[in-house]
Length: 127
Image (cartoon, rainbow, N blue to C red):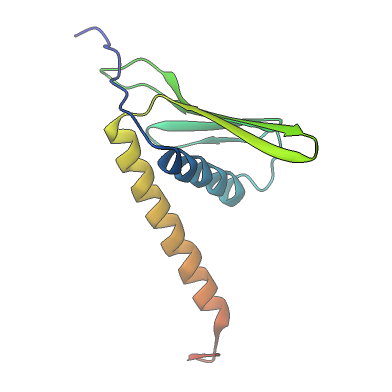
């Protein structure tokens, strides 16, 4: 068996980091409704664990046969004179960015389908 090797992070722009963090929050909202806000944990089936601690959020890669577990994105929320400031640090690979794009698409499709079905009555769509 080959020893685990380090993942290779790529430069990721702020907008992509925010989309990934937003996707993580959507996952928490969708699947962790019974957990207390600020203490939620979502364990994905394969790759990621999302941990909310207070106002901070960590996305953790769980590791695989070739890579060790590690934090891949940290979102820190601070309040300063009534303003909310977000600090994001990330260590994302191309595979992470691609996986979260797919997860985001699936969530939007599910949320869109659910909203459409709530508008249907007796087979007709209300305007």
